Length: 97
Image (cartoon, rainbow, N blue to C red; front, side):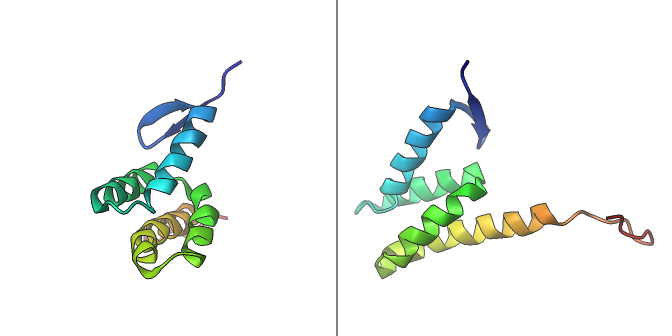
């Protein structure tokens, strides 16, 4: 039985997705700014909050230029995590828990 995962509008086999994520994370460290930007855009498009620990580890050991590339990705994923934890309420109605 094959496992499938859906991220960023695409459908990948779970093993393929993991390989793609690893390659994309390594592209963040590229000397080529276009490669870095493409990797950052792709990671943000996934919206995969499971990337946060990997990105935090990378940022902790990175130089300033790489930290600047990683920061918007981390910020977006953290904000998405916060929003996922909140449920919208309708004005005038109590929030149900």
